[in-house]
Image (cartoon, rainbow, N blue to C red; front, side):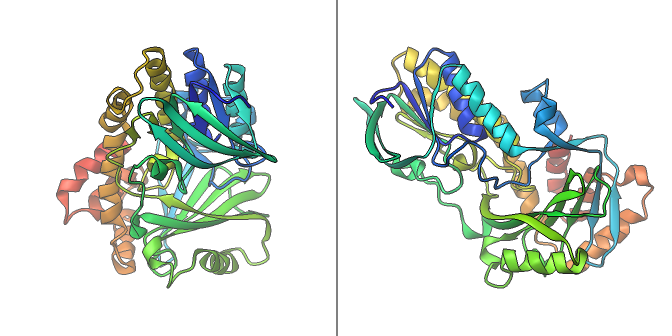
Length: 390
């Protein structure tokens, strides 16, 4: 590890690896730092993506990244009513260990230097001289100077706070999640399931994402301000006992997801944030993989250009912030408004909604129509739903 680079990227998840790859392609000297022993480990993700949006980033998706293709979805009401959804869209269940590793490999192939078990524990930014990043790598203490730092260090990001950006997520918009990889699951492997109940998952939902071979990611999320009444891991164990008695758990994970409105500032002098560190998550679904890929690629490209121009000021880096806000940020804001409306529904209203939609012909049981019926008392939000889901 050298003491000077053009760009330091903290975190080798999808956002960080994409940023490092894009920055290295501009010719910048890039250092990619990962605190764990390998990119992609541990997996703290349900691993699902919409195939259409994912292929906009990777038109040719390697089969090794795909565990399972999803063609159907079923929503479960609190009453137990099952609502199959009509949709032309398909999904992919990724192998995040392989996917993240390959993204890091691409960054290295493009010229970035990757160091694992590298813990960033401090940062100081001097507008004139650059950013100094303190790294504990194995048994060494290293201070690295860079022109730009890209913080892609997840929801628990410290890089943003060190750089003076307001990264605090309101507790009500920080979903606490628990998930297990478990089997055998006696369900169709091409179908995802979603469960809604204010008593089981207040402010969130439960999911079953099949991964093939009888295995599935089964998890749930609870609004952070409701965790005292509904602790996610305990709620998940009760859910498993009810729906899958005797199931065997192969792994378990817990974590937080920032399901909030877009951050207003994601850059400052010599600093950019991307991925969960910048709260670039769909607030309605909690999905953040594709957003992280898009944001990371954009941040890395603009950081590399800024280094070439010898202008790493907040004003120059704000091109990234403005571009994000005008595109994906607009969608995120719409999804946040929908989330606030949908997760305020109690179980009685959710059951009525399910019964109403079940009376429609199957081809009319679309996500958009579900939202139209759910938002009859808030018609101004129906356009948001149309824009989000089309």
